Length: 378
Image (cartoon, rainbow, N blue to C red; front, side):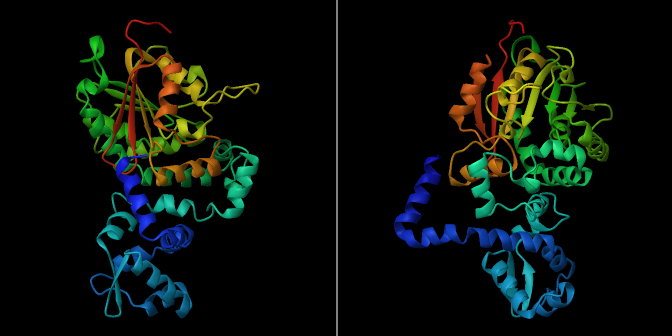
């Protein structure tokens, strides 16, 4: 845990330990208020009525809430500092405008709305603790295979991930640009980047990378599932105004299958953002395709040129909030969040060297750089 976060948590507990416990207990109410406000587009509704603001009666009329219900919701949003009350009218606060209006560049409502129907409750957590398996989508055996069959959920999930990734993507690229030659050395240092974004979703990381790649003629390749790759192509096409045509290529395939990565030793960089946490650290012993973090980093090794760099982008567990993200993984996937020690062991076992852990400028995110040793063969 970061010393600063640890000190703040200890100070809060010591100052009023019972209040601290109540703040944990009330946490689910706060999340529910936020989810309902996003689902009903409360922040968009208020933004549309600027500069005069919105009264409680306007909300009752718009959504057919009861007067009592609207009053409780507005009071909660105001005390959470998501709305500002001036006389009898409600207005947005600076950060509800920045993050909770759907036209905002860093809108996170897609993620919040995704959890409206998949909220972690004591019951679902109990079931996940006992079974060790996902409880999302009514305990689907595999969320990703479920997306293959349910295009609407696949699209909704991709949109949610896209909505929350623009800020982290910019912060990651800023962090990489501060590394000498973006982590490369030797004969690769001045060559055009050839990047493979594994499980690249909407492609926002590849787009941001190509916007700032320091060497001309660089290109990015995005590997995404057949069910979602057409969505990736759509998002990439929408970004054509900010990246050069033909610098980003989308490939449909299974990221656990070696052939999906193309020829060995092809890439200067392999990027895995929010990928490793979805899978067990060790490979599954079951028959069929190996599915685990250990297998993924082995495939990354194969795809990289000697001296190339694996870039991992994750929320490493450092404090109470990132520990809670591990519960998200328990609820949604078969994986886990990583501590630095877990990540280091995984990469070193695969043979990577020169590990570098870099905190990005965005909330809880970390960039981990790991190099395939120069001159060694697959």
